Length: 257
Ligand SMILES: Nc1nc2c(ncn2[C@@H]2O[C@H](COP(=O)(O)OP(=O)(O)OP(=O)(O)O)[C@@H](O)[C@H]2O)c(=O)[nH]1
Ligand SMILES: [Mg+2]
Image (cartoon, helix red, strand yellow):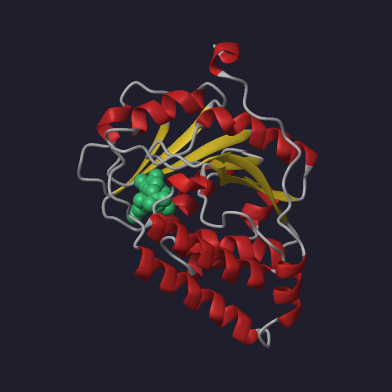
């Protein structure tokens, strides 16, 4: 597999260089999409082995992911791993995502923040639970951590997402991508459990718990209405637990370095 890592970044000057350096330990090809940042995010990347796509203006997370994915596909990537730029995803989990992808060639692999969920702020946890319920219903299967931006997309899945990229922007893109993957494109969501990371000095989220969740619910409601409320999807999403990859824990730091 030729893997590329795509990192959407909006005002992430304090973390982006470390995230890129860590990711480069596991994957050679890294694309950062600097989405109109005003804090010097791109300047932090000088001299690092990374391709930087710069947007003159902010276009949102979805449009940036799509740009990065298309760039990676144009350069022959057979799978894309997406990773947030704020340091909340550990690149050292990348090998576990790759192992899950090898076990599940028709899987859409999600690094699901199932460990230490108590660290997730209350409002965000509630918003995530809402999104998980609705998105799983529309996808027709239970999905763990639908709001994780740390995922592995096989090339064939990316190639099927052009319509989603046209319709859905911002944080809605990743939610609709999951539904399309599972309900239309035949890719089963598979979770790799990872730690939830919310350090005390985390910058304020770009995700707006009410406004962004409302946009996601509206998108899902539209899909359900066009499918006659898809009762089989609700039944299946409640009947079976999310699929979890049989992947070991990451090695402790002393074994890795
Ligand atoms: N390119 C681009 N990236 C964005 C935009 N908004 C957020 N991001 C990136 O998307 C990632 C996730 O953004 P966060 O604000 O941390 O949102 P989140 O992780 O879903 O929410 P929290 O769990 O509260 O941190 C980060 O890498 C951001 O830099 C945007 O408008 N454009
Ligand atoms: Mg974050």
